[in-house]
Image (cartoon, rainbow, N blue to C red; front, side):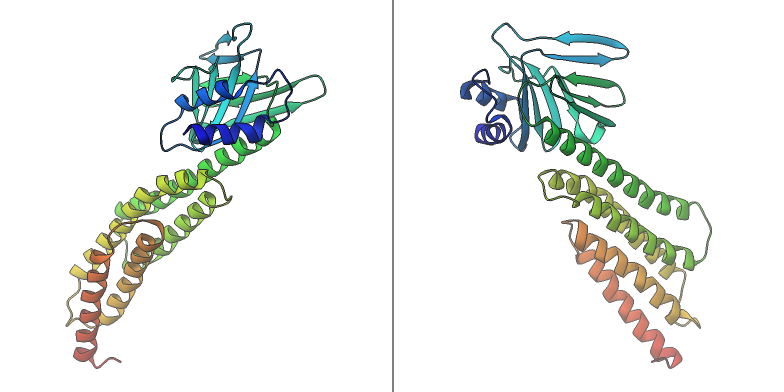
Length: 282
């Protein structure tokens, strides 16, 4: 953990002058991170930062010889004064960030990060504030895009479940659900950085859930059809398309067991074969 913090801080804080924090101080930031976190950037300040919650603003400043830090990991940005604590003074999840503002001039540099209920304004003396702002902004956008696509995928299934539609509905839903998940995956993997793992981890249970529900809907349709019915083969073939969507979703976006989906496909192939024999299909 300390190595990751030191490496990230060395990249971000190098060349900031004799008043930059020493290695021991930087290493102390490691206590802020969990074992599975990866440090990406660090900023330091001798002025501290402002924190606003519910229209109440407080200013947190370090001691005369101390520092305030902004430590950015693959899942959050932590703000802490003096850097020797295991608990940050402010802790904002990247998934909750709604706005990032960066200003830089010869006389002043600033970084503001907002969520729906908190705003932190930090004035760094050292570190690549432009790179930090860009990372925070693009990661927050990816989280918003990911959530939007996942919500749309779940809404498609919810809407179908509320209707008494035809099988064509679930066939269309299967296509659109998979399309939303593909877009969610593109949001997660848009940049080659550590945040990708966090985004994919958030996507996995939703993808697994919609795949299971697609399979359940498809099998419910099968239960309404008898192999001896005229047109059974056509219905079975449509159901198979939906099961293929569900199988692909599980295979591409989750680590879940594929056996139940493969068993459903195998059973359906047997029904298709019996229907073809019954009605002289091909």
